[in-house]
Image 1 (cartoon, rainbow, N blue to C red):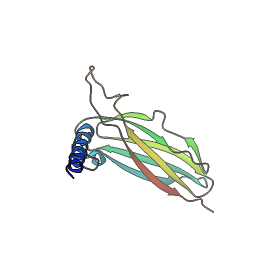
Image 2 (tube, rainbow, N blue to C red):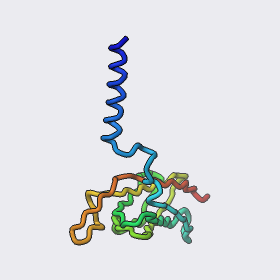
Image 3 (cartoon, rainbow, N blue to C red):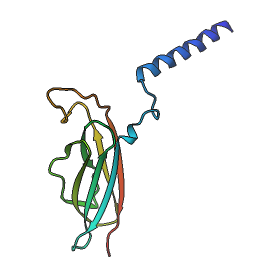
Image 4 (cartoon, one colour):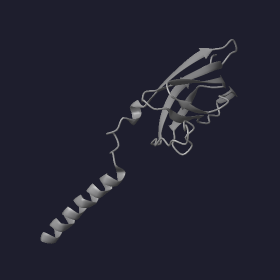
Length: 144
């Protein structure tokens, strides 16, 4: 029985070491509050053509380097996309897509905060930014 107690204590020690290595546990930090994503759709004069506007708002007191991308969908044709999907967001930034929808589809946009491509770097000052993702989904309906 004493040997089982040693294993139990060892497991507890291993869990403690793992927790210390991972630093903050998932769900205990405020990463999800760092960025706010708001999207808006505007119908154009053409059938099944929509302008998608994504506003990324920075809610922290330092600039964040972000990259915007979209998931491929065979029912969505991108007529125009943001020229530069990378941005340094200190307050907010807007991105626009002009899309044509051939059938009902879900548009998924991904915002990635990064550190290794830190475009917010001034005078070689390094900002340590934890990498994380935010997604926004929007259902686009074909107009009949």
